[in-house]
Image (cartoon, rainbow, N blue to C red; front, side, top):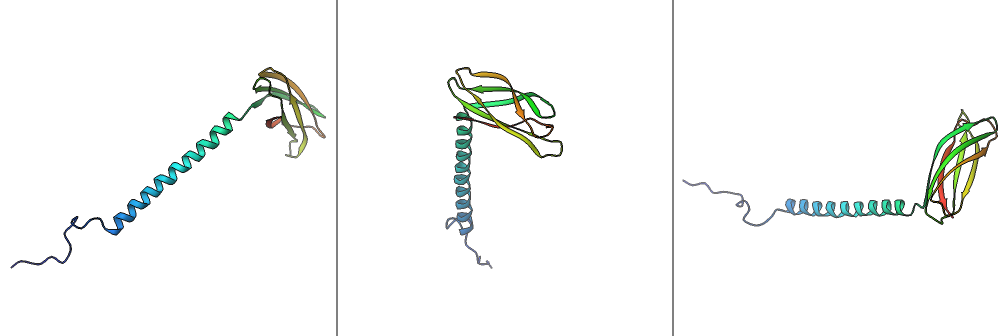
Length: 132
C-alpha cells in the first residue's frame, strides 16, 4: 500500500514567508550599510579637504611663568588663521591658554611662541587651528 504525504512538495509553490522576510532583511541591511558608508565618507572628505590649517607642537620648555612652544604650522597660501595652545600644571589644572595668529603667504611656518601661565606648566597642548 502507498502512504499519502501530508506536506506540500518542496519548492513547488514558491518561497515560504520566512525566506521572503530574510531576503527583505538582507536588502535593508545592504541599503543601510551603504548609506552609513556614504555618510562616513562624506564627513571624512570634508574634514580632510576643509582643513586649511594644521599644526603640531615640536618641542616645549616650561619656566615658572611661561611655556615656550615650537610650533610647526602648515596652511594654504594666503590663508590667515590662529592656533590655540594651552598648558596644564602637573596636577592637571589649566594654567594658561592663548591663541596665536598666523598670516602671510608662506605655506609652512616654524615659530616659537610664548604662552604666559599662572603657575609652572608641565605641558604644551595644541587644542586646534582655525582659518579666519
